[in-house]
Amino acid sequence: LRRADVAMYSAKRLRTGRELYDPGRDSHSTDHLALVGALGDALRTGELDVEFQPKADAFNRTVVGVEALTRWRSPVHGTIPPDVFVPLAEHAGLARALTRYVLARALAQARAWSDAGHDLTVAVNLTASDLQDVALPEEIESALVVADARPESLILEITESAVLRDPERIGNVLARIGESGVGLSLDDFGTGYSSLTHLKMLPVGEVKIDRSFVAHVKTDPADAAIVGATIKLAHSLGMRVVAEGVEDEETWRRLADFGCEMIQGFVLAPALPAAKLEDLLPEPVHEAC
Ligand code: C2E
Ligand code: CA
Ligand code: CA
Image (cartoon, rainbow, N blue to C red; front, side):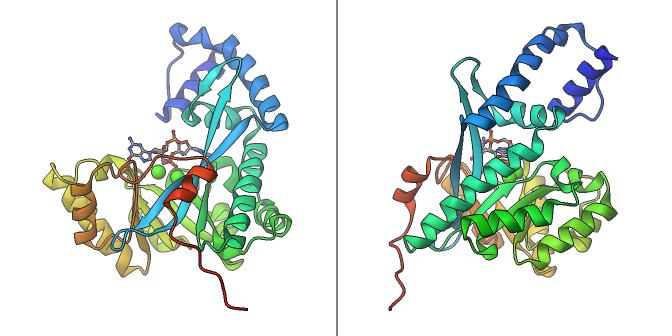
């Protein structure tokens, strides 16, 4: 059973769906336990940093939103990437605590930016297990109340593979969230299995085209065709499109030519601490008294 557990952990971390037990990876299991303990402590002590990557209007280049991306720089274990600690949190039953932590920080920041006259949406990534939690809509509502933030300022990013775990139950949870005014965005779009079906059924207002397609828009005509068709499809369903992982101006230009509304990627900036992100924001708008 312990070996099956190690294999399951690898399958989750590598997102392959299934893995055979590999003794080579077993050496991680003691590290793994230590890391789970450290992650629990980090969530209690506030050791995780929530940073923000800008999303810009593809046509006028204004930063209109941010995505919260969490960073764990452990004094003991070094820098641990989210691709490692997010699956770890899910595996160890800490996903809910992680999401609550990120949500609280992201919403407090959204409120601070709003007070300073910046009109921005803040996106938070949900884990697959969050979506199976029927208490999630209430939890989001109370996080909005605590931060005194507007539901419209929050976007929750979900993935299709997470929805596929239990489409009916998750559909209900998402519908309740959608009704509250909080936005929903379908992340990593194009990497799932039955994309078209889900686009139609889910109450999402935005799709994010996965970096694996965006990266080759300039060089691979097949990827360019997929991206162009995806943008058209999303528009015909009334959704806006964000291209993620945009690394250069030429790719940006091509995406804008396809009608993609928003750009996110290193071409603009990586995830930054809130204070640094402010350098990229337009002049604040102060409402007249
Ligand atoms: P994601 O949601 O798809 O986030 C985008 C990832 O792509 C981020 O990696 C970001 O730093 C990276 N990225 C952005 N622009 C570019 C670019 O132009 N080029 C390249 N090569 N990469 C770019 P990061 O921060 O390492 O996060 C990895 C994944 O971990 C995220 O993928 C998300 O699924 C998850 N994650 C991160 N923070 C959180 C969190 O607070 N909660 C949850 N549940 N998941 C999180
Ligand atoms: Ca995301
Ligand atoms: Ca993504």
